[in-house]
Length: 196
Image (tube, rainbow, N blue to C red; front, side, top):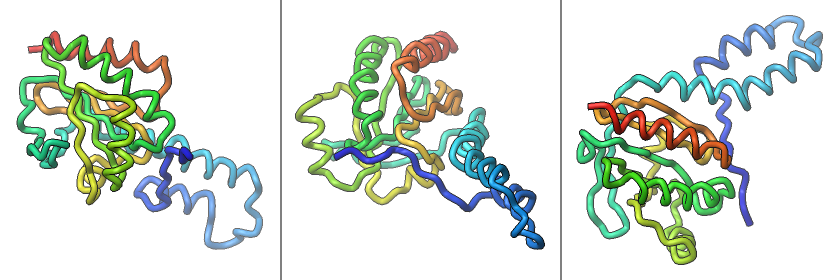
């Protein structure tokens, strides 16, 4: 059974000022349903997007995890390459749709300098191996069992993709997945591959 792929955290620096404006400490009984709807809409849609957008242009956090063969994988290994870092889980419907499409992109552009890493956030190695038996992949998979990468990259939605330039700077962040994302991914990858 698939689970919904969106996480919402209610504590953030962005939400706190909004909560004071929408939920005043005095007279809260007068709050109407419109304010509640706006607050929920902000929490679910706008706030996660703003949080990810703030990471664009900043240095990608380093990581050191093992791939499925036991080899250490770190961000530093990929300096000078374009890195597509995708956070996903085998139980996520959108992720299961996205992963084969990423594999096709990887096979198309890996000789040009594209690296794709799929970071599985689930702790079940069996679930991952079952998925990979049905859909073998060409690119590297790491498991973020302890959540270190998840905390460093601060994402709330699955899948979430970080496209990191050759200089180690986060250039694009994508939340969720739809078939229309593929053209955008490819355009951004080509643009970054052309840069020195």
